[in-house]
Every structure is written in C-alpha cells, then in structure tokens.
Figure: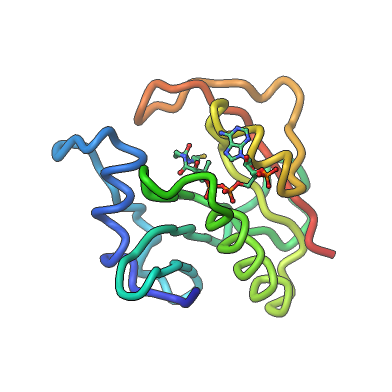
Length: 145
Ligand SMILES: CC(C)(COP(=O)(O)OP(=O)(O)OC[C@H]1O[C@@H](n2cnc3c(N)ncnc32)[C@H](O)[C@@H]1OP(=O)(O)O)[C@@H](O)C(=O)NCCC(=O)NCCS
C-alpha cells in the first residue's frame, strides 16, 4: 500500500467504476490539490486497489474536520480478497494522524455491504442516483476518533 499520483489511478477507475467507457470522466477537479490523498495497493507491480480522499464538508457533521472518499475500487478479478479493507485501513490510519475526524462518501448501493462490514454507517433518507452513472447511491460516513 502506498500513496500515488492520481493519474496512476485513471485506468483502474475507468475499468471498475465507469464500465470501461472511454467517454466517461475518471477525474475529480480536486485530484491534483496538495490536500487530496490517493492510496493504492499493488501486487508486485500491478495496481489492484485504490481509494482517493478530498477535504470536504460532510453532509452528516459539517462541524467536524472531514474528508470525502471517492473512486474506491478493487480490480474486477481480485475482489473479495481483502484488498479493499486493507487500503481503507491504511488510509484511515494516515488520515487520523492528520487530524481528520470523519469520512463521508456517496456509497454505491451495491457496495453498502462492504462499507458496513468495514465500519461505515448509512445516512437515512440520503438515497439518490449518481448524476455521473445513474446508479443508486446512499450517503455513508465513518468516525475516525
Ligand atoms: C466494493 C469493493 C471496493 C470492495 O473491495 P474488495 O477488495 O472486494 O473487498 P474486501 O475483499 O476487502 O471485502 C471485505 C469484506 O466485505 C465484504 N464485501 C465486499 N464487497 C461486498 C459487497 N459488494 N456487498 C457485501 N459485502 C461485500 C467481503 O465479503 C468481505 O467480507 P469477509 O471479510 O467476511 O470476507 C470492490 O468490490 C469493488 O471495487 N466493487 C466495484 C466498484 C464499487 O462498487 N466501488 C465502490 C464505489 S462507492
């Protein structure tokens, strides 16, 4: 697990989260900001998992110091082997050290089981469709204190 440049993650983001569609965006406008953090896990040289974090006001607890998680993805053929949990553990450790108090995200409904398993909660009444993918999402959050 290590921190990477966001460009490293575009191919994985597109394959896992954008149906491999070359026309869809795989960049966040905040990607290159110095306060954004991009974590990745490698098997030898192969990138297999990624998670990006951006300072962002939480819709759950705007009074806290919060980061938003985006582009959480484990490559298609290696899902279910614990890599997603591990990249989150490492990210949370580093974010906690930076004084971050809570994480939030728009979690894909098909992945909510994973998030609940790794300690996240869902925000009641926050169900919505992603404007980018039209897939069902729910706001999720996790305290780091
Ligand atoms: C969701 C995702 C990131 C999880 O990563 P992963 O590496 O497959 O997850 P892990 O192997 O670390 O799983 C940890 C636990 O969560 C469970 N889990 C994983 N995905 C799950 C899901 N979609 N629903 C329910 N439980 C799930 C695993 O079974 C595992 O439980 P166990 O420890 O009892 O075996 C990955 O499956 C993925 O990239 N999916 C497609 C893209 C996506 O939906 N990303 C999230 C966008 S918000």
